Length: 249
Ligand code: PGA
Image 1: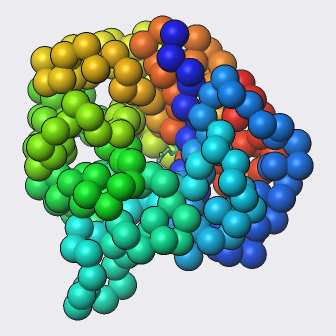
Image 2 (image 1 turned 120 degrees about the vertical axis):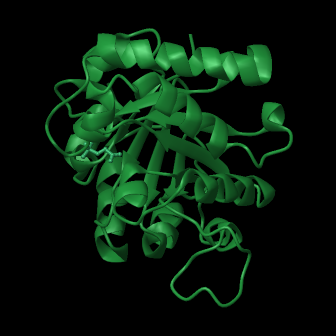
């Protein structure tokens, strides 16, 4: 069995001061563990606070929520993969549903971001998932396969790349509606089999996380499902004590 990955997505919460307080509180209780990986996807400005609090700890990773694909230049307001790495990030989210639906990010842009992260030595977690309309129209499987294929389309040697997938049905994000472990597992199975088609048995090592209204009450049940390798948690990850419970699930 793969080791679980427990990932916090703070979204636009926890600036540098709050991030430092969160990390101090979290790390005071969360002792070093080698049976799981914890990732904190922080706002870019909070990366030094998160990475600084971690010191050299390798069981908890700092992550950034978004990058731009160019290395540097006239892109006001953007953060490159190299800059995020320099600020302490080891991994980036790509294609989170809020990036896709609030900021209009396309599969092609996700592909550029995944490729840029890889080139800069940053891991990536590609987020995919359907809206309620797509689910009701029976399009979920076709959509997640497309988002997966197109998201990694610009990476040459995918088989040797450090990445993971987060299945996050858009209708379950921030709504209090969670996919059942069975529903999520069914889609995770589709994603795994598509990955096998792409990279053979290496697919078995790629963590597939579930996200969407995960909290301290439903985390354990979801993680018990064999096809769910980890959890990507938004709202319930912003507060250190709630996150501590989930990270120790
Ligand atoms: P949520 O968000 O846990 O608040 O539903 C999950 C996410 O957006 O990654």
